Amino acid sequence: MKVSLGPTFQTPTDSWPLLRAMAERADAGPYHAFASLDRLAYNSYEPIATLAAVAAITTRVRLMTAVLISPLRNAGILAKQAATVDAISGGRLTLGLAVGSRQDDSLVAPAGFHDRGRRFTEQLEEMRRIWAGETLEGATYAVGPMPVQAGGPELILGGTADRALDRVGKYANGYVMGGRANDGEWVKGIMERVNAAWAANNRTGKPRFVATLPCAFGPGAEEQIDDAIAHYYGGRPGRGSERKASPKPASAEAVREMIAMHEELGTDEIVFRPAKLDLAQVDQLTAAIS
Image 1: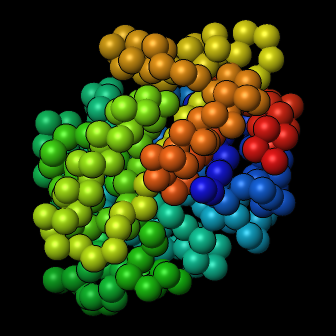
Image 2: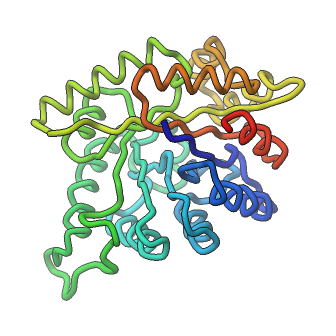
């Protein structure tokens, strides 16, 4: 199973030197991808801009959004941004997308919240046409550049509603799980539902499964994870308590146990996200997975 690295939930203004060092460590190995994440009404870097910067300083590691909130953005702009990062990186982009669950992100965009699922489906259709090189109605030229990866970047989708899983079967290369990815029974159940949606859409092969989890090491590690989750899911105590009750990657042994659990369940890749923006935490993670 592949193991990848992601930045912390919060990335204030002065975070770039540490993020750059994290990306360089990821590129040196043993990590498969460097995975940014998204919120708008939050103290964090924008994920596409971050990956464009990371693309310029790396040569090997894949670049991933895990996940980007697609309905906050215009489909044509997002398709062009993603194709640009794919071109800069030589075809290393994996685009993880979801509808988002926090209304404040939609309010400050501004973008509709209650119709975001419908608009997301429309975006996926439009982006596929753009990445295929079609000239859309009324345009003089097609939207360029063409992605390096034929048909567009690798696409993984998140969400737990039936409609979200049906989109995986229709449009995506795989599924990205956050939220409760440290709960083995939940992971097993969501994989079964994704596989059923895949089969219902007459897809061949099988979906790729990616999990994302915060981690921490040293004194107070579990509290660091709980605090990071509570802050990121601010105002959503139910979601935070679900994750708080499950095992946490809060030591080298716990990280290895989480990897073993996901290997047994059939997960293809797991992204660990240090709860603190601290290179010492990254080094301890690297030692744990090595």
